[in-house]
Image 1 (tube, rainbow, N blue to C red):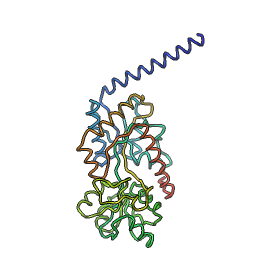
Image 2: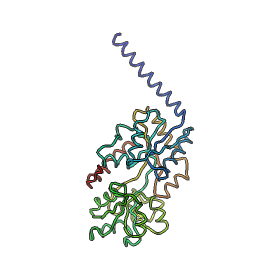
Image 3: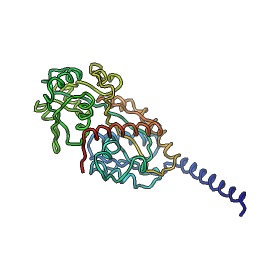
Image 4: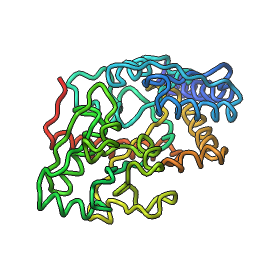
Length: 325
């Protein structure tokens, strides 16, 4: 076989492969799709996963089901997603915890974001709130920072445990503000009962966890993340208004395929996510009601978001000197 014939043969193979991928994407999906949710059933992220699965079912014309695979700080479900067949029929719901936090907390993580997953789209973001007991005299984060600088460690902040989202968001705040906060870990129980009771005074967490008690007047919000004030909470200042423009912890979930999934299928799923995130006004308003935003991103934009988010959480975790193994 001479050089010209060999080149023509290779070109034919490439063209045939591309044609096969195109046909595969056109036929996709031809059977139900499964989304692995690394969260316990009945939790907020699980409910959010099921909400978007229902919307994707409407867009794609195929059943999209959620399978819970919780455990080991999301690592069990994420590993299962990474090892799934890269054919677009098994996806996985990643999150702040699994992809931006866990890789910095543990030495042995059975997956790598940039190696094992193909980002499809973010699903939604939840703003982080600085929530306080009504006995806290300050009405905003700026005044609280001033008090903490004058009286270091004068308030107790509850967390869901060492290395939890609420703990790390608090450490990030303390580092950015240059203040000292005493953190009280609640490893096996919810801290909100003690926060409502006044045994602890503060908590940094995604807003939905506190929204019921806030609306009932049992807790108050001193600040929210976001570049501008949230439309559903116009009276709550942002952390940027408190002098912390770089404080941006965000609880998010996003859809991923196993690495190696054909690009046309990833693109088709990304397009479906754009439609799914915009087609249900009731769902959009539900996310906004608890301080969140249902949205979609193109894969390239989502990849850039992931890289920055991972870097920010990594800096916080290293700065706090936290390691869980």
